[in-house]
Length: 118
Image: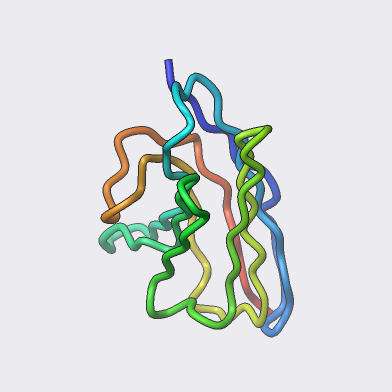
């Protein structure tokens, strides 16, 4: 069974930074994608970022380009999302999952709350 476990959410002031981590288990093979989407009640799911284990190609949503960076430890199948210059509109529950390529998620974790507020 494929499972994802997120960690690292919290409260931060505008302009601050947070780091999210995601540990994946049950993924078979060496070619896969891990990434995050976020959701605010009453709004549609928004793809944030995705990284492919094949060549390390990365993808970002338009609203986070230049501020967020995703990396992948292929040995541990653990992804990290470094979020800088956070804005109040980044407030959401962030879910880690996969395969995420093409902004399609078949599996995701419980989610972690990120709140950006002064």
